[in-house]
Length: 100
Image 1 (cartoon, rainbow, N blue to C red):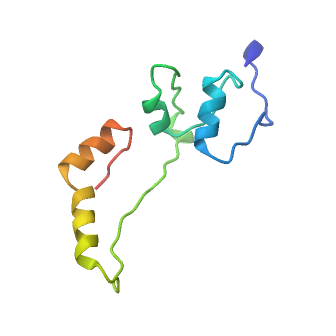
Image 2 (cartoon, rainbow, N blue to C red):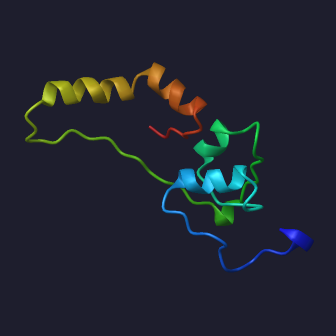
Image 3 (cartoon, one colour):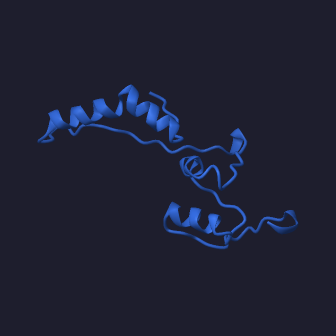
């Protein structure tokens, strides 16, 4: 972002978040909008600039068991694992905000 200006037209449109991070880390772009979790993974190489709350957005990931699934017991075991304190701790360390 030379001279403090920001281009209104993107320099690049990457189909995957990993491509955005790669361009940022290779110096092909000066700034990019990426997932917080990607910043956490690469915090020694890139600097995070947070948006103010009025621009904030979030992505919600849900987990559920299919009511007529054939492996309900296995599905329940998986959900219980994801909701365990060990998994929640890992997710938080990885940059995910856990709501419930």
